[in-house]
Image 1 (tube, rainbow, N blue to C red):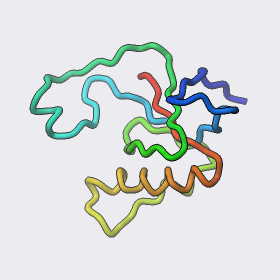
Image 2: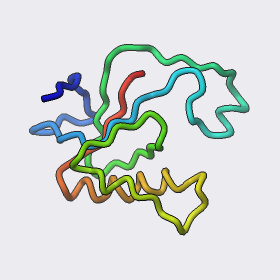
Image 3: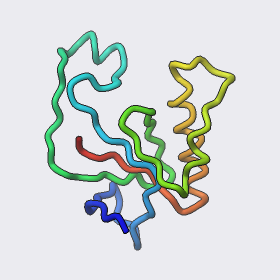
Image 4: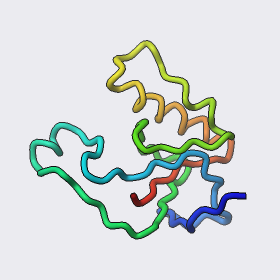
Length: 113
């Protein structure tokens, strides 16, 4: 059985959600938007604190396909929409997947690199 680091949440739920998707921050050349790239220099290095931030239910936080671990309970969430441009399909997928994860009692989390 795999063990995962402890996690923090924005709010303190009665019991921690089961994390189904882990999005890790990526050092050096992270997948950031154009405004970030115009206003900051790369490479970018995040602090390595071995932390996990679970996103509470009813809170959308987009994630992408870079440095992402999806557990078996959410493999269905890897399907990409074909009705949108490929550059944004993983982001749209994240919104749809998050909404369904809430109903399943599952959550996403962001981890340090």
